Image (cartoon, rainbow, N blue to C red; front, side, top):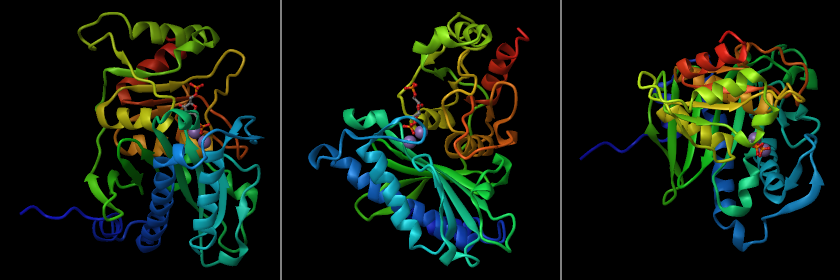
Length: 334
Ligand code: AHG
Ligand code: MN
Ligand code: MN
């Protein structure tokens, strides 16, 4: 008989021990993120039956319409982490200001940033959704964090990952020692190791981008996308398009099978759409840890100097060779 797969907490404590000097605490934190995932997966599964689809009528700090499920997902994070004692600050795409937790400090030295529900335009049509998270450690341990302390470079992340609510619910994370994926076994409510040490191929055959925005892009971006459609046997072109409207789902496909996802800067909006701290940084850490690459088109995502909590950034992410090709075109070197 084969061995029973490891659960999330036993994998971290058994296989990733002694890393960052705080594995137990990180393990507890990741298990709490997993709990948020279980609660949200349960809501999503019956969303059409319990009047939680549609919008709240509000507009968030990003200027985007808030879905009921965006709010529910954000509240779930707050409920779980306000009582966990594991973090001293929380920042979310859906909240203008961070939530600081002085009662948890100085015992808790971690801060959590998250996109509670990613791809929320998918809620009303039963398409995949995600949650993205990023964990950083307090720089100055001797004082309570302020909003400024949450604004950090991607290289400062201690851990990052995402939950994907697809045909299965998965939790994928890195603590800087490779990327590992767990599938929620709904019968027992446990995340079990299903994808140990994920490696992204250096080149893929798919690209994901909202091509409806073509006319808004620079000539370099347009030329790169055009190049993916021209037959070339050496690089297995033309590539196929796969775009779900959920960044997590699109990046997950590429993480496992290779390819490239782009949300590029636009002529009138050079900063693009996606958020540096809640979306680009955590996914960049995951993808780099799997051997891939994440870029703005001109520089590494993880080296971008963050200035504001809700800063946006162009994101080009996926297989290392594909992302390098895109950089060449975007920088006008071809
Ligand atoms: P969110 O739902 O958190 O606001 O994120 C939506 C993001 C991302 O998931 C997706 O890749 C992208 O926005 C889709 O945007 P377009 O509809 O402009 O393609
Ligand atoms: Mn998002
Ligand atoms: Mn969101």
